[in-house]
Length: 605
Image 1 (cartoon, rainbow, N blue to C red):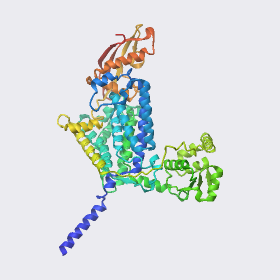
Image 2: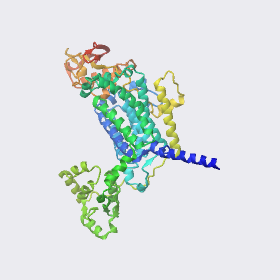
Image 3: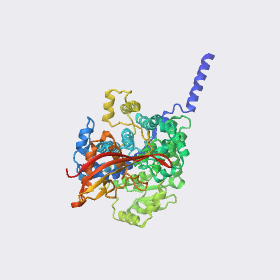
Image 4: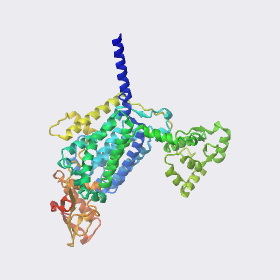
Protein backbone atom coordinates (compact mmCIF):
# COMPACT_ATOMS: atom_id res chain seq x y z
CA UNK A 1 0.00 0.00 0.00
CA UNK A 2 2.80 2.38 0.94
CA UNK A 3 4.64 1.45 -2.24
CA UNK A 4 1.59 2.36 -4.36
CA UNK A 5 1.24 5.62 -2.44
CA UNK A 6 4.87 6.48 -3.10
CA UNK A 7 4.51 5.74 -6.81
CA UNK A 8 1.41 7.92 -6.90
CA UNK A 9 3.28 10.75 -5.17
CA UNK A 10 6.20 10.46 -7.57
CA UNK A 11 3.76 10.57 -10.48
CA UNK A 12 1.99 13.65 -9.11
CA UNK A 13 5.30 15.40 -8.54
CA UNK A 14 6.38 14.49 -12.05
CA UNK A 15 3.17 15.92 -13.52
CA UNK A 16 3.53 19.09 -11.43
CA UNK A 17 7.10 19.54 -12.66
CA UNK A 18 6.07 19.23 -16.31
CA UNK A 19 3.11 21.58 -15.88
CA UNK A 20 5.24 24.05 -13.95
CA UNK A 21 7.71 24.37 -16.81
CA UNK A 22 5.11 24.41 -19.61
CA UNK A 23 6.12 21.12 -21.18
CA UNK A 24 2.48 20.37 -21.96
CA UNK A 25 1.71 23.76 -23.47
CA UNK A 26 2.17 22.81 -27.08
CA UNK A 27 -0.17 25.59 -28.15
CA UNK A 28 2.19 28.11 -26.59
CA UNK A 29 5.29 26.59 -28.20
CA UNK A 30 3.97 25.59 -31.62
CA UNK A 31 0.76 27.59 -31.96
CA UNK A 32 0.33 31.09 -33.39
CA UNK A 33 -1.74 34.05 -32.27
CA UNK A 34 -4.48 34.93 -34.76
CA UNK A 35 -3.86 38.65 -34.25
CA UNK A 36 -0.20 38.16 -35.12
CA UNK A 37 -1.32 36.31 -38.24
CA UNK A 38 -3.52 39.30 -39.12
CA UNK A 39 -0.49 41.61 -38.91
CA UNK A 40 1.47 39.07 -40.94
CA UNK A 41 -1.31 39.04 -43.56
CA UNK A 42 -1.39 42.83 -43.81
CA UNK A 43 2.33 43.06 -44.55
CA UNK A 44 2.19 40.12 -46.97
CA UNK A 45 -0.38 41.99 -49.05
CA UNK A 46 1.60 45.23 -48.76
CA UNK A 47 4.84 43.53 -49.84
CA UNK A 48 3.18 42.03 -52.92
CA UNK A 49 1.86 45.47 -53.91
CA UNK A 50 5.28 47.10 -53.41
CA UNK A 51 6.93 44.26 -55.32
CA UNK A 52 4.54 44.75 -58.25
CA UNK A 53 5.19 48.50 -58.27
CA UNK A 54 8.96 47.91 -58.31
CA UNK A 55 8.72 45.31 -61.05
CA UNK A 56 6.41 47.52 -63.14
CA UNK A 57 9.25 50.04 -63.57
CA UNK A 58 10.96 47.50 -65.85
CA UNK A 59 7.87 45.76 -67.20
CA UNK A 60 8.94 46.15 -70.83
CA UNK A 61 12.50 44.98 -70.20
CA UNK A 62 11.71 41.98 -68.01
CA UNK A 63 8.30 40.72 -69.11
CA UNK A 64 7.73 41.44 -72.80
CA UNK A 65 8.93 40.10 -76.13
CA UNK A 66 10.99 43.26 -76.68
CA UNK A 67 12.83 42.70 -73.39
CA UNK A 68 15.74 40.60 -72.17
CA UNK A 69 13.79 37.41 -71.42
CA UNK A 70 11.86 36.27 -74.46
CA UNK A 71 9.55 33.30 -74.74
CA UNK A 72 12.02 31.48 -76.99
CA UNK A 73 14.49 31.38 -74.10
CA UNK A 74 11.79 30.22 -71.72
CA UNK A 75 10.69 27.25 -73.79
CA UNK A 76 14.25 26.15 -74.52
CA UNK A 77 15.81 26.37 -71.07
CA UNK A 78 13.11 26.70 -68.46
CA UNK A 79 10.55 24.22 -69.67
CA UNK A 80 9.17 21.55 -67.38
CA UNK A 81 6.02 19.68 -66.48
CA UNK A 82 5.15 22.13 -63.69
CA UNK A 83 6.55 25.26 -65.29
CA UNK A 84 3.70 27.59 -66.25
CA UNK A 85 2.79 31.26 -66.28
CA UNK A 86 -0.16 33.37 -67.35
CA UNK A 87 2.44 35.87 -68.54
CA UNK A 88 3.37 33.46 -71.36
CA UNK A 89 0.01 34.06 -73.06
CA UNK A 90 0.91 37.43 -74.53
CA UNK A 91 4.17 39.38 -74.59
CA UNK A 92 2.83 42.92 -74.93
CA UNK A 93 3.19 45.64 -72.31
CA UNK A 94 -0.60 46.10 -72.22
CA UNK A 95 -1.33 42.45 -71.40
CA UNK A 96 1.44 42.29 -68.79
CA UNK A 97 0.10 45.49 -67.24
CA UNK A 98 -3.38 43.97 -66.96
CA UNK A 99 -1.95 40.96 -65.12
CA UNK A 100 -0.01 43.26 -62.81
CA UNK A 101 -3.18 45.20 -61.98
CA UNK A 102 -5.19 42.02 -61.31
CA UNK A 103 -2.44 40.67 -59.04
CA UNK A 104 -2.31 44.02 -57.24
CA UNK A 105 -6.09 44.00 -56.73
CA UNK A 106 -6.01 40.55 -55.10
CA UNK A 107 -3.02 41.63 -53.01
CA UNK A 108 -5.12 44.55 -51.74
CA UNK A 109 -7.95 42.14 -50.90
CA UNK A 110 -5.40 40.09 -48.97
CA UNK A 111 -4.21 43.19 -47.15
CA UNK A 112 -7.73 44.07 -45.93
CA UNK A 113 -8.70 40.42 -45.42
CA UNK A 114 -11.59 40.13 -47.86
CA UNK A 115 -12.40 36.46 -48.60
CA UNK A 116 -8.96 35.87 -47.24
CA UNK A 117 -8.31 32.22 -47.94
CA UNK A 118 -9.50 32.49 -51.54
CA UNK A 119 -7.46 35.61 -52.32
CA UNK A 120 -4.42 34.08 -50.61
CA UNK A 121 -4.61 31.12 -52.99
CA UNK A 122 -5.12 33.41 -55.99
CA UNK A 123 -2.26 35.71 -54.92
CA UNK A 124 -0.01 32.66 -54.56
CA UNK A 125 -0.88 31.52 -58.08
CA UNK A 126 -0.31 35.00 -59.52
CA UNK A 127 3.06 35.23 -57.75
CA UNK A 128 4.12 31.85 -59.20
CA UNK A 129 3.04 33.08 -62.64
CA UNK A 130 5.00 36.31 -62.23
CA UNK A 131 8.17 34.65 -60.96
CA UNK A 132 8.13 31.96 -63.66
CA UNK A 133 8.00 34.61 -66.38
CA UNK A 134 11.56 35.72 -65.62
CA UNK A 135 13.54 33.59 -63.21
CA UNK A 136 16.83 35.31 -63.93
CA UNK A 137 15.83 38.29 -61.78
CA UNK A 138 14.73 36.31 -58.72
CA UNK A 139 16.40 36.30 -55.31
CA UNK A 140 16.05 34.44 -52.01
CA UNK A 141 13.52 37.06 -50.94
CA UNK A 142 11.22 36.02 -53.80
CA UNK A 143 11.48 32.40 -52.69
CA UNK A 144 10.63 33.30 -49.09
CA UNK A 145 7.68 35.50 -50.09
CA UNK A 146 6.21 32.68 -52.17
CA UNK A 147 6.66 30.20 -49.31
CA UNK A 148 5.03 32.54 -46.79
CA UNK A 149 2.02 32.87 -49.10
CA UNK A 150 1.91 29.10 -49.53
CA UNK A 151 1.70 28.42 -45.80
CA UNK A 152 -0.74 31.32 -45.45
CA UNK A 153 -3.24 29.31 -47.52
CA UNK A 154 -3.47 26.80 -44.65
CA UNK A 155 -3.86 29.45 -41.93
CA UNK A 156 -6.84 31.60 -40.83
CA UNK A 157 -5.16 34.87 -41.82
CA UNK A 158 -8.50 36.68 -41.93
CA UNK A 159 -9.70 35.76 -38.43
CA UNK A 160 -8.87 39.21 -36.99
CA UNK A 161 -8.64 42.81 -38.23
CA UNK A 162 -10.16 42.01 -41.60
CA UNK A 163 -13.32 42.44 -43.65
CA UNK A 164 -14.07 38.77 -42.97
CA UNK A 165 -13.82 39.41 -39.23
CA UNK A 166 -15.87 42.63 -39.35
CA UNK A 167 -18.82 40.87 -41.00
CA UNK A 168 -18.49 37.65 -39.00
CA UNK A 169 -21.58 36.74 -37.00
CA UNK A 170 -19.40 34.74 -34.61
CA UNK A 171 -16.53 37.21 -34.24
CA UNK A 172 -16.88 37.33 -30.45
CA UNK A 173 -16.38 33.56 -30.16
CA UNK A 174 -13.13 33.30 -32.10
CA UNK A 175 -10.08 31.93 -30.27
CA UNK A 176 -7.04 34.12 -29.80
CA UNK A 177 -4.48 31.41 -30.52
CA UNK A 178 -4.51 28.16 -32.49
CA UNK A 179 -2.37 25.07 -32.83
CA UNK A 180 -2.49 23.18 -36.14
CA UNK A 181 -0.30 21.42 -38.64
CA UNK A 182 0.01 24.73 -40.52
CA UNK A 183 1.21 26.69 -37.46
CA UNK A 184 3.88 24.05 -36.88
CA UNK A 185 4.83 24.07 -40.57
CA UNK A 186 5.15 27.86 -40.82
CA UNK A 187 7.22 28.01 -37.63
CA UNK A 188 9.57 25.28 -38.85
CA UNK A 189 9.80 26.81 -42.34
CA UNK A 190 11.02 30.07 -40.83
CA UNK A 191 13.52 28.17 -38.68
CA UNK A 192 14.78 26.17 -41.68
CA UNK A 193 15.79 29.40 -43.43
CA UNK A 194 18.27 30.25 -40.68
CA UNK A 195 19.42 26.76 -39.72
CA UNK A 196 20.32 25.80 -43.27
CA UNK A 197 21.76 29.24 -44.03
CA UNK A 198 24.06 28.67 -41.05
CA UNK A 199 25.01 25.19 -42.31
CA UNK A 200 25.98 26.66 -45.70
CA UNK A 201 28.04 29.36 -44.01
CA UNK A 202 29.84 26.82 -41.82
CA UNK A 203 31.24 25.22 -44.97
CA UNK A 204 32.80 28.54 -46.04
CA UNK A 205 36.38 29.48 -45.20
CA UNK A 206 35.58 33.20 -44.97
CA UNK A 207 32.93 32.57 -42.31
CA UNK A 208 35.23 30.23 -40.43
CA UNK A 209 37.97 32.91 -40.32
CA UNK A 210 35.57 35.72 -39.44
CA UNK A 211 36.06 37.62 -42.71
CA UNK A 212 32.65 37.07 -44.30
CA UNK A 213 30.94 40.33 -43.30
CA UNK A 214 34.00 42.37 -44.27
CA UNK A 215 34.18 40.62 -47.64
CA UNK A 216 30.45 41.13 -48.22
CA UNK A 217 30.77 44.85 -47.52
CA UNK A 218 33.50 45.11 -50.17
CA UNK A 219 30.98 44.26 -52.88
CA UNK A 220 30.36 47.88 -53.87
CA UNK A 221 27.50 47.00 -56.20
CA UNK A 222 25.23 46.03 -53.26
CA UNK A 223 26.66 48.02 -50.35
CA UNK A 224 25.25 51.30 -49.04
CA UNK A 225 27.28 54.31 -47.88
CA UNK A 226 26.89 53.22 -44.26
CA UNK A 227 28.00 49.71 -45.17
CA UNK A 228 31.12 51.17 -46.82
CA UNK A 229 31.78 53.20 -43.67
CA UNK A 230 31.73 50.02 -41.56
CA UNK A 231 34.65 48.65 -43.60
CA UNK A 232 36.90 50.86 -41.45
CA UNK A 233 36.20 48.63 -38.43
CA UNK A 234 37.45 45.14 -39.37
CA UNK A 235 37.54 43.91 -35.76
CA UNK A 236 33.92 44.87 -35.23
CA UNK A 237 32.98 43.17 -38.50
CA UNK A 238 34.69 39.98 -37.35
CA UNK A 239 32.47 40.03 -34.24
CA UNK A 240 29.43 40.59 -36.47
CA UNK A 241 30.46 37.60 -38.60
CA UNK A 242 30.54 35.14 -35.72
CA UNK A 243 27.46 36.71 -34.08
CA UNK A 244 25.46 36.29 -37.31
CA UNK A 245 26.24 32.64 -37.83
CA UNK A 246 25.58 31.73 -34.18
CA UNK A 247 22.34 33.71 -34.17
CA UNK A 248 21.14 31.89 -37.28
CA UNK A 249 22.13 28.55 -35.81
CA UNK A 250 20.83 28.92 -32.24
CA UNK A 251 18.40 31.85 -32.35
CA UNK A 252 15.38 29.92 -33.68
CA UNK A 253 15.59 27.52 -30.72
CA UNK A 254 14.44 30.38 -28.49
CA UNK A 255 10.94 29.81 -29.87
CA UNK A 256 10.82 26.37 -28.28
CA UNK A 257 12.03 27.15 -24.76
CA UNK A 258 9.12 26.10 -22.50
CA UNK A 259 10.04 28.32 -19.54
CA UNK A 260 8.75 31.89 -19.93
CA UNK A 261 8.22 31.23 -23.61
CA UNK A 262 6.67 34.62 -24.33
CA UNK A 263 9.84 36.44 -23.20
CA UNK A 264 12.04 34.28 -25.40
CA UNK A 265 9.65 34.85 -28.33
CA UNK A 266 10.00 38.58 -27.79
CA UNK A 267 13.77 38.17 -27.79
CA UNK A 268 13.83 35.98 -30.92
CA UNK A 269 11.53 38.22 -32.96
CA UNK A 270 13.41 41.34 -31.87
CA UNK A 271 16.82 39.88 -32.77
CA UNK A 272 15.82 38.51 -36.16
CA UNK A 273 13.77 41.53 -37.21
CA UNK A 274 16.76 43.69 -36.17
CA UNK A 275 19.07 41.41 -38.17
CA UNK A 276 16.98 41.84 -41.32
CA UNK A 277 16.61 45.58 -40.89
CA UNK A 278 20.38 45.86 -40.44
CA UNK A 279 20.75 44.03 -43.78
CA UNK A 280 18.61 46.76 -45.33
CA UNK A 281 20.80 49.48 -43.78
CA UNK A 282 24.14 48.18 -45.07
CA UNK A 283 23.11 46.41 -48.30
CA UNK A 284 20.89 47.23 -51.29
CA UNK A 285 18.83 44.04 -51.31
CA UNK A 286 15.44 45.17 -52.53
CA UNK A 287 12.56 43.80 -50.45
CA UNK A 288 14.54 40.90 -48.98
CA UNK A 289 15.06 42.52 -45.52
CA UNK A 290 11.37 43.43 -45.24
CA UNK A 291 10.24 39.97 -46.33
CA UNK A 292 12.47 38.35 -43.73
CA UNK A 293 11.20 40.70 -41.02
CA UNK A 294 7.56 40.11 -42.03
CA UNK A 295 7.89 36.37 -41.46
CA UNK A 296 8.65 36.98 -37.78
CA UNK A 297 5.50 39.04 -37.29
CA UNK A 298 3.51 35.79 -37.42
CA UNK A 299 5.46 34.56 -34.38
CA UNK A 300 4.72 37.52 -32.09
CA UNK A 301 3.45 36.26 -28.70
CA UNK A 302 -0.12 36.68 -27.47
CA UNK A 303 1.05 38.79 -24.53
CA UNK A 304 1.82 41.64 -26.90
CA UNK A 305 -1.81 41.91 -28.01
CA UNK A 306 -3.16 41.46 -24.50
CA UNK A 307 -1.00 44.32 -23.24
CA UNK A 308 -2.23 46.56 -26.10
CA UNK A 309 -5.85 45.69 -25.30
CA UNK A 310 -5.36 46.40 -21.60
CA UNK A 311 -3.94 49.82 -22.36
CA UNK A 312 -6.87 50.64 -24.63
CA UNK A 313 -9.57 49.65 -22.17
CA UNK A 314 -9.71 52.84 -20.16
CA UNK A 315 -12.83 53.78 -18.24
CA UNK A 316 -13.83 56.21 -21.00
CA UNK A 317 -13.34 53.56 -23.67
CA UNK A 318 -15.44 50.98 -21.83
CA UNK A 319 -18.39 53.38 -21.57
CA UNK A 320 -18.51 54.22 -25.28
CA UNK A 321 -21.61 53.22 -27.24
CA UNK A 322 -22.41 53.43 -30.93
CA UNK A 323 -26.00 53.61 -32.16
CA UNK A 324 -27.07 52.91 -35.72
CA UNK A 325 -30.26 52.68 -37.74
CA UNK A 326 -31.36 49.06 -37.64
CA UNK A 327 -33.27 49.43 -40.92
CA UNK A 328 -30.12 50.53 -42.76
CA UNK A 329 -27.97 47.43 -43.27
CA UNK A 330 -25.19 49.33 -45.03
CA UNK A 331 -24.80 51.57 -41.98
CA UNK A 332 -24.14 48.61 -39.69
CA UNK A 333 -21.73 47.01 -42.16
CA UNK A 334 -19.70 50.20 -42.45
CA UNK A 335 -19.65 50.61 -38.66
CA UNK A 336 -18.40 47.04 -38.28
CA UNK A 337 -15.64 47.69 -40.81
CA UNK A 338 -14.75 51.02 -39.23
CA UNK A 339 -14.52 49.62 -35.70
CA UNK A 340 -12.55 46.56 -36.84
CA UNK A 341 -9.83 48.41 -38.73
CA UNK A 342 -9.46 51.00 -35.97
CA UNK A 343 -9.13 48.19 -33.38
CA UNK A 344 -12.34 49.33 -31.67
CA UNK A 345 -14.40 46.18 -32.16
CA UNK A 346 -15.12 45.89 -28.40
CA UNK A 347 -17.36 48.97 -28.52
CA UNK A 348 -21.00 47.79 -28.55
CA UNK A 349 -23.09 48.55 -31.64
CA UNK A 350 -26.69 49.14 -30.58
CA UNK A 351 -29.79 49.66 -32.76
CA UNK A 352 -30.98 53.24 -32.23
CA UNK A 353 -34.59 52.01 -32.23
CA UNK A 354 -33.91 50.62 -28.74
CA UNK A 355 -33.50 54.16 -27.41
CA UNK A 356 -36.20 56.64 -28.59
CA UNK A 357 -34.19 59.71 -27.58
CA UNK A 358 -31.08 58.57 -29.48
CA UNK A 359 -33.21 57.49 -32.44
CA UNK A 360 -34.68 60.97 -32.66
CA UNK A 361 -31.17 62.49 -32.73
CA UNK A 362 -30.08 59.95 -35.34
CA UNK A 363 -32.93 60.94 -37.67
CA UNK A 364 -32.37 64.67 -37.25
CA UNK A 365 -28.63 64.43 -37.87
CA UNK A 366 -28.88 61.65 -40.49
CA UNK A 367 -25.94 59.93 -38.90
CA UNK A 368 -24.95 57.20 -36.50
CA UNK A 369 -24.52 58.38 -32.92
CA UNK A 370 -21.54 57.95 -30.61
CA UNK A 371 -22.23 58.49 -26.90
CA UNK A 372 -19.23 59.09 -24.64
CA UNK A 373 -18.78 58.45 -20.91
CA UNK A 374 -20.45 61.79 -20.07
CA UNK A 375 -23.51 60.99 -22.15
CA UNK A 376 -22.58 63.53 -24.82
CA UNK A 377 -23.66 62.68 -28.35
CA UNK A 378 -21.31 62.89 -31.36
CA UNK A 379 -22.53 62.86 -34.96
CA UNK A 380 -21.31 62.44 -38.52
CA UNK A 381 -17.63 63.01 -39.22
CA UNK A 382 -17.01 64.49 -35.76
CA UNK A 383 -18.05 61.13 -34.34
CA UNK A 384 -15.35 59.43 -36.41
CA UNK A 385 -12.75 61.93 -35.19
CA UNK A 386 -13.83 61.33 -31.60
CA UNK A 387 -13.66 57.53 -31.92
CA UNK A 388 -10.24 57.67 -33.55
CA UNK A 389 -8.86 59.10 -30.29
CA UNK A 390 -9.28 55.67 -28.69
CA UNK A 391 -7.57 53.71 -31.47
CA UNK A 392 -3.94 52.50 -31.23
CA UNK A 393 -3.52 54.48 -34.45
CA UNK A 394 -4.74 57.67 -32.76
CA UNK A 395 -1.50 59.62 -33.14
CA UNK A 396 -1.62 59.16 -36.90
CA UNK A 397 -5.38 59.41 -37.35
CA UNK A 398 -5.96 62.43 -35.13
CA UNK A 399 -3.69 64.68 -37.15
CA UNK A 400 -5.00 63.35 -40.47
CA UNK A 401 -8.72 63.57 -39.72
CA UNK A 402 -8.42 67.09 -38.36
CA UNK A 403 -7.06 68.34 -41.68
CA UNK A 404 -9.55 70.65 -43.35
CA UNK A 405 -9.66 68.75 -46.70
CA UNK A 406 -10.57 65.49 -44.98
CA UNK A 407 -13.16 67.18 -42.77
CA UNK A 408 -14.72 68.81 -45.83
CA UNK A 409 -14.86 65.45 -47.64
CA UNK A 410 -16.31 63.81 -44.54
CA UNK A 411 -19.09 66.40 -44.22
CA UNK A 412 -19.97 66.01 -47.91
CA UNK A 413 -20.20 62.22 -47.53
CA UNK A 414 -22.61 62.47 -44.62
CA UNK A 415 -24.64 65.35 -46.04
CA UNK A 416 -25.17 63.46 -49.31
CA UNK A 417 -26.05 60.23 -47.46
CA UNK A 418 -23.37 58.31 -49.36
CA UNK A 419 -22.72 55.96 -46.45
CA UNK A 420 -26.32 54.83 -46.35
CA UNK A 421 -26.32 53.99 -50.05
CA UNK A 422 -26.84 50.19 -50.28
CA UNK A 423 -24.75 50.00 -53.46
CA UNK A 424 -21.58 50.67 -51.43
CA UNK A 425 -21.92 47.50 -49.35
CA UNK A 426 -23.95 45.41 -51.79
CA UNK A 427 -21.22 42.76 -52.13
CA UNK A 428 -20.45 42.73 -48.41
CA UNK A 429 -22.61 40.27 -46.54
CA UNK A 430 -22.70 39.06 -42.96
CA UNK A 431 -21.58 35.46 -42.71
CA UNK A 432 -20.42 32.72 -40.36
CA UNK A 433 -16.65 32.42 -40.04
CA UNK A 434 -15.23 29.80 -37.71
CA UNK A 435 -11.61 28.94 -37.08
CA UNK A 436 -10.96 25.25 -37.41
CA UNK A 437 -8.54 22.91 -39.11
CA UNK A 438 -9.44 19.46 -40.31
CA UNK A 439 -7.26 16.45 -39.66
CA UNK A 440 -6.61 16.18 -43.40
CA UNK A 441 -5.15 19.69 -43.72
CA UNK A 442 -3.08 19.10 -40.59
CA UNK A 443 -1.66 15.88 -42.03
CA UNK A 444 -0.99 17.52 -45.42
CA UNK A 445 0.82 20.47 -43.80
CA UNK A 446 2.97 18.24 -41.61
CA UNK A 447 3.85 15.93 -44.51
CA UNK A 448 4.82 18.89 -46.69
CA UNK A 449 7.07 20.45 -44.05
CA UNK A 450 8.74 17.05 -43.61
CA UNK A 451 9.34 16.91 -47.37
CA UNK A 452 10.78 20.44 -47.24
CA UNK A 453 13.11 19.37 -44.43
CA UNK A 454 14.51 16.53 -46.57
CA UNK A 455 14.75 18.89 -49.56
CA UNK A 456 16.86 21.30 -47.49
CA UNK A 457 19.06 18.42 -46.32
CA UNK A 458 19.57 17.52 -49.98
CA UNK A 459 20.47 21.12 -50.86
CA UNK A 460 23.55 20.91 -48.63
CA UNK A 461 25.03 18.15 -50.78
CA UNK A 462 22.91 17.23 -53.85
CA UNK A 463 25.48 14.78 -55.18
CA UNK A 464 25.33 12.55 -52.10
CA UNK A 465 21.75 13.01 -50.88
CA UNK A 466 19.18 11.54 -53.25
CA UNK A 467 15.43 11.96 -52.97
CA UNK A 468 12.67 9.80 -54.49
CA UNK A 469 11.17 11.14 -57.69
CA UNK A 470 7.77 11.45 -56.00
CA UNK A 471 9.13 13.95 -53.48
CA UNK A 472 10.76 15.95 -56.26
CA UNK A 473 7.50 16.08 -58.19
CA UNK A 474 5.66 17.38 -55.11
CA UNK A 475 8.28 20.09 -54.53
CA UNK A 476 8.31 21.19 -58.17
CA UNK A 477 4.53 21.12 -58.58
CA UNK A 478 3.95 23.32 -55.51
CA UNK A 479 6.95 25.57 -56.12
CA UNK A 480 8.48 24.68 -52.76
CA UNK A 481 12.02 24.76 -54.19
CA UNK A 482 14.43 26.44 -51.78
CA UNK A 483 18.12 26.79 -51.09
CA UNK A 484 19.27 29.12 -48.31
CA UNK A 485 22.86 29.82 -49.31
CA UNK A 486 22.66 33.64 -49.23
CA UNK A 487 26.04 35.26 -48.47
CA UNK A 488 27.56 31.82 -47.89
CA UNK A 489 30.50 32.56 -50.20
CA UNK A 490 31.18 36.32 -50.20
CA UNK A 491 33.89 37.05 -52.75
CA UNK A 492 34.85 40.49 -51.49
CA UNK A 493 34.86 41.74 -55.08
CA UNK A 494 33.22 44.70 -56.76
CA UNK A 495 31.47 43.87 -60.04
CA UNK A 496 30.28 46.08 -62.87
CA UNK A 497 29.67 46.16 -66.63
CA UNK A 498 31.17 48.22 -69.42
CA UNK A 499 29.55 47.99 -72.86
CA UNK A 500 31.57 50.05 -75.36
CA UNK A 501 29.46 50.70 -78.42
CA UNK A 502 29.71 52.55 -81.72
CA UNK A 503 26.98 54.63 -83.30
CA UNK A 504 26.45 54.81 -87.07
CA UNK A 505 28.35 58.12 -87.18
CA UNK A 506 31.34 56.53 -85.43
CA UNK A 507 30.76 57.99 -81.96
CA UNK A 508 32.04 55.81 -79.11
CA UNK A 509 29.72 55.46 -76.12
CA UNK A 510 29.10 53.26 -73.10
CA UNK A 511 25.76 51.64 -73.88
CA UNK A 512 25.45 50.37 -70.31
CA UNK A 513 25.57 53.94 -68.95
CA UNK A 514 23.07 55.35 -71.48
CA UNK A 515 25.59 56.90 -73.85
CA UNK A 516 28.08 58.37 -71.37
CA UNK A 517 31.85 58.27 -72.05
CA UNK A 518 33.52 54.88 -71.65
CA UNK A 519 35.16 54.47 -68.21
CA UNK A 520 36.79 51.21 -67.24
CA UNK A 521 37.56 52.09 -63.61
CA UNK A 522 35.45 50.76 -60.75
CA UNK A 523 32.43 53.02 -60.15
CA UNK A 524 32.14 54.65 -56.75
CA UNK A 525 29.22 54.24 -54.37
CA UNK A 526 27.47 57.34 -55.69
CA UNK A 527 27.07 55.59 -59.03
CA UNK A 528 24.82 52.55 -58.93
CA UNK A 529 26.64 49.81 -60.83
CA UNK A 530 23.23 48.29 -61.45
CA UNK A 531 19.90 50.08 -61.77
CA UNK A 532 18.20 48.00 -59.08
CA UNK A 533 18.24 44.60 -57.42
CA UNK A 534 16.39 42.90 -60.30
CA UNK A 535 18.90 44.13 -62.87
CA UNK A 536 21.77 43.16 -60.59
CA UNK A 537 20.48 39.59 -60.35
CA UNK A 538 20.00 39.37 -64.10
CA UNK A 539 23.40 40.80 -65.05
CA UNK A 540 25.44 38.87 -62.49
CA UNK A 541 23.83 35.66 -63.78
CA UNK A 542 24.50 36.71 -67.36
CA UNK A 543 28.19 36.31 -66.56
CA UNK A 544 27.64 32.63 -65.76
CA UNK A 545 28.13 29.99 -68.47
CA UNK A 546 24.77 28.50 -67.49
CA UNK A 547 23.09 31.59 -68.94
CA UNK A 548 25.44 32.16 -71.88
CA UNK A 549 22.61 31.86 -74.44
CA UNK A 550 20.82 34.81 -72.86
CA UNK A 551 23.55 37.22 -73.93
CA UNK A 552 22.02 37.25 -77.41
CA UNK A 553 18.65 38.39 -76.01
CA UNK A 554 20.31 41.04 -73.87
CA UNK A 555 22.14 42.30 -76.96
CA UNK A 556 18.87 42.51 -78.90
CA UNK A 557 17.27 44.36 -76.03
CA UNK A 558 20.09 46.94 -75.91
CA UNK A 559 19.72 47.56 -79.64
CA UNK A 560 15.96 47.94 -79.37
CA UNK A 561 16.16 50.25 -76.35
CA UNK A 562 18.70 52.62 -77.90
CA UNK A 563 17.46 52.66 -81.48
CA UNK A 564 13.82 53.18 -80.51
CA UNK A 565 14.88 56.51 -79.00
CA UNK A 566 17.43 57.62 -81.64
CA UNK A 567 17.24 58.03 -85.39
CA UNK A 568 19.65 58.25 -88.35
CA UNK A 569 23.37 58.36 -87.62
CA UNK A 570 22.73 58.39 -83.88
CA UNK A 571 21.47 54.82 -83.92
CA UNK A 572 23.55 52.11 -82.27
CA UNK A 573 25.52 50.03 -84.76
CA UNK A 574 27.47 47.50 -82.67
CA UNK A 575 28.91 46.94 -79.20
CA UNK A 576 30.80 44.52 -76.97
CA UNK A 577 29.80 43.41 -73.49
CA UNK A 578 32.47 43.23 -70.78
CA UNK A 579 32.07 42.01 -67.24
CA UNK A 580 34.59 43.49 -64.79
CA UNK A 581 35.47 42.67 -61.21
CA UNK A 582 38.04 43.79 -58.67
CA UNK A 583 38.77 42.03 -55.41
CA UNK A 584 39.45 44.16 -52.35
CA UNK A 585 42.28 42.56 -50.37
CA UNK A 586 42.42 45.07 -47.52
CA UNK A 587 41.52 48.64 -46.63
CA UNK A 588 44.16 50.20 -48.91
CA UNK A 589 44.93 47.33 -51.26
CA UNK A 590 43.00 46.05 -54.25
CA UNK A 591 43.76 43.49 -56.92
CA UNK A 592 43.94 44.30 -60.62
CA UNK A 593 40.71 44.74 -62.51
CA UNK A 594 39.63 41.49 -64.10
CA UNK A 595 38.03 42.11 -67.50
CA UNK A 596 35.95 39.31 -69.10
CA UNK A 597 34.62 39.58 -72.63
CA UNK A 598 31.09 38.15 -72.82
CA UNK A 599 29.49 39.08 -76.13
CA UNK A 600 29.82 40.94 -79.41
CA UNK A 601 26.64 42.20 -81.03
CA UNK A 602 25.68 43.96 -84.24
CA UNK A 603 22.27 45.66 -84.36
CA UNK A 604 21.82 45.45 -88.15
CA UNK A 605 22.91 41.91 -89.02
